[in-house]
Length: 415
Length: 84
Ligand SMILES: Cc1cc2nc3c(=O)[nH]c(=O)nc-3n(C[C@H](O)[C@H](O)[C@H](O)COP(=O)(O)OP(=O)(O)OC[C@H]3O[C@@H](n4cnc5c(N)ncnc54)[C@H](O)[C@@H]3O)c2cc1C
Ligand SMILES: [Zn+2]
Image 1 (cartoon, each protein chain N blue to C red):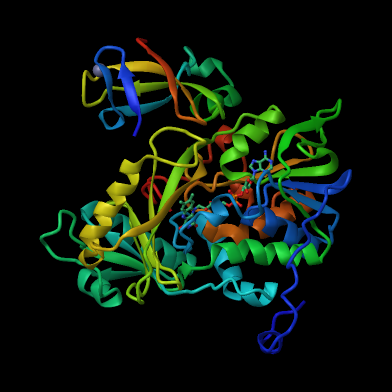
Image 2 (image 1 turned 90 degrees about the vertical axis):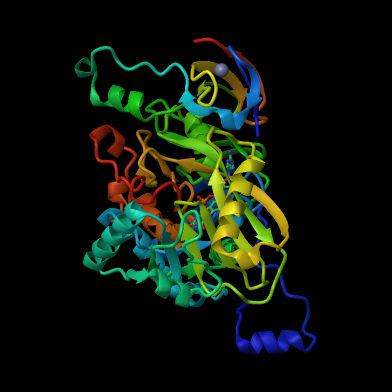
């Protein structure tokens, strides 16, 4: 069914219950393309494969429920003001798609470009952010430098005072940056893909990848039986090393728990998104009124999907210093997701040494913002069997050829 | 927070330690003798297993020494630590 003002009004006045938005499919014995991972990136890949490349015999398999990985666990910050041209191109491609995504999917993903402000607390931050502002101007991407007073004017609850251990010395602001509703992104892509015939199969863990005598992929083994496939696309975030290991491919990835928290809901107080890499705090306010707070990763690799309490309390200390008026808020929930981190903090989108096997991973702590762009260029890559021009620099092979896209130094630790 | 047994100092809280990554990754003795793939493997590829992991830790705010640990990456339980 189509969402419109008309359908909402009709439903409000006693229409039948809203129908299911996508089919909870049973796996078929064979597909043209099997996508492993029903997170935002996997679902978007399926959607663009069906919509733009006419490939509709697709299964998206997930070991849990759709959107239950990092897609449903992240703090939803969206921006495109990265340093390197390659990164700016892929994140800006995504940002442009965000701007029309709700209309495209006929599903409200609640994209809200309320501005993302990144705080500078020391001389190094000032130089790095100004460098970003200049680089972004050359790339045609909006990003502007604010003084501390301008930052305070843009975000009144922010404390910039000199008594802070890390006073705010200025900020970089991307006004087109913002947030979107994470679950709605997964649901919207799932609904639109399912309507075009894509099978979304939940509770179906991939446990093996089959290859023929030439080494090419022929299908996958799952907890719900074997499935033949012409092409297999792994889009499994923190579990990518495990899956690629099934095909004998070693990956330049390490998986770390990354945490987030939400406060009790309060009236609107945070007008924008504020990020501070230096003191490690990421904060915005959801439409429900909860403050959504992103913390750091644990120092060691883990699949525990929890994370140490000291990591979260460290971030809360930073938030309390930046926003003294939040000090008495209680935290309602905290959780973790497993993020797949590459050595250069840039994603891997493209072909693998195994014919017919494709991978989209390494988005680490910051891939939600890329969801539409990543799915779009990855679908083209899978359909054509060669990298989309925007995806090309993000090849797995770049680590061998010596062409890393270093956003680590540029973006501090997190995205 | 993990409780980690330094082989020299005994059990101490995690924040006295610095994680040192996967253990047993040896730098090729003659870097120019290996090809790009082997060099990339040494520099970047990691086993990143879901399960038993051999890793290095340094007791940074203690005795300052490196040691090896075996930890399960699903439960985070450390089954043993040993002097290098
Ligand atoms: C706490 C936190 C905060 C974050 N904040 C931000 C932010 O503010 N902005 C931003 O841009 N990014 C952020 N990120 C990163 C972002 O969430 C991810 O980069 C992005 O959501 C990855 O999407 P995905 O679809 O690739 O992965 P996921 O949504 O994790 O999907 C992968 C799916 O693969 C499935 N899977 C794994 N193994 C198997 C298997 N063997 N068989 C079948 N299925 C399998 C999983 O169940 C999962 O559903 C954050 C992440 C976390 C954890
Ligand atoms: Zn010690």
